[in-house]
Length: 431
Image (tube, rainbow, N blue to C red; front, side, top):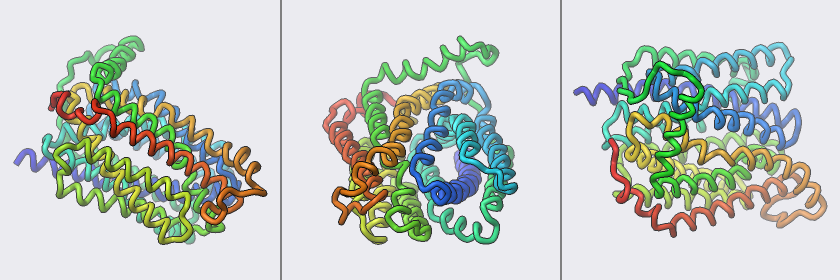
């Protein structure tokens, strides 16, 4: 009965998070279209991605220590409060026609710092509230709330922007943050007994505790090798993920309806996988589901560059998001099982910074690479124009193809690594 109540409480938090992510996805969709129509360049998308990801990574080790120290509610509420303030600032700028790209970059920077709390807080929340047998199901819920907005947000944003404009969408986003804050405040979350002192907030003490997360990973080679796989996947994948929106717009003559359909397909693929994971625990060896998922997903990314019509774009989006949801869910379950609850904030933060530390580099390079190197180089002589398109679309497709190819090589290497294959048997469960 107690475990059933914990599951219900977890589902309430997940529902609140779903509403909040939906609001944020609508804001991102609307602002992304505004940026492309205003500038017609890929570089701003790279700058925003770097401005969001990089400061969050730098702050992540500190966030992990605070997540382990603070009550889980504080760690969950803090990013929602900060994000709602930033959205309020952008709302004012759009409302008064004073918005500039520099302000959007600054907002992304601050929200990136706040976001550094979300990954360790929500990942460790599953182990605090659910039994080990429910980890895949819990991660399935988290995958659902991350994927569902991908379907609804483009449609709702496309409708609401006509009646409310971008300021109206940002206002809706602020309301969703308030909802998730109220839900978390009203929901019971079990406390965690800590082995560290709550008294000292001296920098040296915090740094020492943060370093414990890195030491935990470094002493377990299979986990470290698995993490290095994600390091290279995130780095090489940064050359493609950042450019999906401008690529689709460039290849369809700024057809926002087409973009919305493809974005919805990404969401549908994630939802289908999440629903399946809620009723199926996955393969006995989760590492097989993880590696198989990333192989299929990045194969779809590779072929995304060759898509010619809506059916092909939607197919690759469905396959890519479906398989990546499986991969990420099984990866989460492995880490949650192998990491003591008292260390999860620090370990998951260390895990995030190792996996994503190089991603801002590729994100930052991808936009300027397209605008100032690839496009001028192939402007008059496009590469494989029948498949990759012409003009800016051709340059964007080349960057996506480059990133997808390197990701496939990375996955193949990981599949051949025996230590990664044996990760579930050689490292004992901790929960």
